[in-house]
Amino acid sequence: MVTILFASPRDKGNTASLLKPFIETLKSEGEDIVFFNLYAMEIEGCRACRACQDQFQIFGCPIEDDMHRVFDSIIKSDLILLASPVYSWYVTAPLKAALDRLVYGMNKYYGKKRGPCLWENKAMALLVSCGYPPQRGADLLEEGMRRYAKHSGLRYLGMLAEQDKGYNEKFMDQEKEKRVGKFARELLRKLYPCDTSFIG
Ligand SMILES: Cc1cc2nc3c(=O)[nH]c(=O)nc-3n(C[C@H](O)[C@H](O)[C@H](O)COP(=O)(O)O)c2cc1C
Image 1: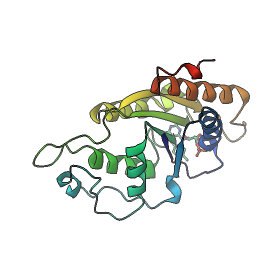
Image 2 (image 1 turned 45 degrees about the horizontal axis):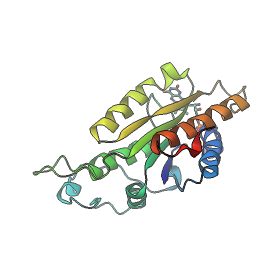
Image 3 (image 1 turned 120 degrees about the horizontal axis):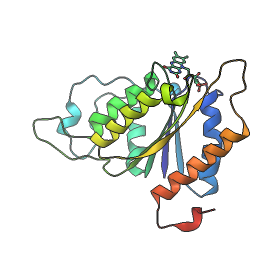
């Protein structure tokens, strides 16, 4: 099962057009998907109250918003796919808020007594669009997420980043679509290495 956190304010924009073939590929391989559009949800920023650090088995966040649904889905998932445009060299604000809530709610490292990591060994991957060429537009975001994953006991499986060359150029084309399909199949291979049905 894959939880997708989609975090563009443009739900017919570039990131959304990368997600379309990504989701189609996963579905064609029989993967269960739970999709969240973070811009359409209520997700507050972490208040650093640390109440979650006294709850070792559950999310434990006292903020009553949509983040609880995201937490419940991730707990059941094998892969968390972050789909975001790059804003100011990182993810967009709602996804940043979600990541802050998760780094505390999932990792019970920060209380009086050190507790468990609730999402240990799950996988994380990134599907990103950016204005600069990816090596200068998405490099810092990828490095940040690599560290985030390492800190959280997650397996970082990789990033596909595609460049938006501006309003005068069509973003999506067949080459991008092919790269997205290949990326999705590679992620499935890494997730389920013994299942050879994805080869082809
Ligand atoms: C507020 C804002 C900040 C941005 N910051 C960056 C940036 O730091 N680096 C970059 O490469 N592109 C940046 N971009 C460009 C977007 O990442 C790019 O246009 C992306 O494809 C938009 O995706 P969307 O259509 O899914 O919203 C920014 C765009 C906006 C609107």
